[in-house]
Image 1 (cartoon, rainbow, N blue to C red):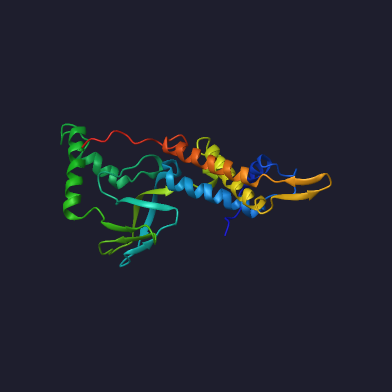
Image 2 (tube, rainbow, N blue to C red):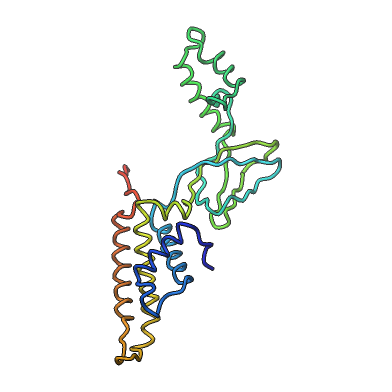
Length: 250
């Protein structure tokens, strides 16, 4: 089923209709065809381009004795879970924790007593090592097909954790992004040409007042296939907005 039309989607469909000569000929595509073409363009872009994914964080409220949680369908990968820690979560502005700040100020930052900033740096490294040994870090298993996050430990109290995730960019953002918008529109246009060519290819010609009218179904299909090959080559050259891989050592 086609996705629910949005403002950005309707704008793209209107441009596709115009580029295909809408309003000037009798044989035209229906709105469902345009929605299918845009769907295929977005799905292909999400499959091939790293620009369709963004890095973000989200909060999850853990409940006692509950180890399975289902995240939104937009989440593609879970990288790490961050728990609250004393001495390293003071925050800033309105989100400041006065008890944590008092601990940091009293035992870490007072120069001449325990070493100042140098001691604070050593203390944060100490926290990281102790966390790995004594379980302050939360182990988990992520199931991408079912979007299930499985916590590998017993949760004894309510706790809010920060999840580092990679998720899909919203459709409206992709259709308005200056790097991805033109590629998506051209890919959808190529699919529209193929579908329209299939429809017109059923009839070699149509009767008219001045004789037979030849249809360009085969030409449209060839143009659409050529456009798809060009766009696939463009995405392989990172010309649609994605970032090429960096240097790999090892």
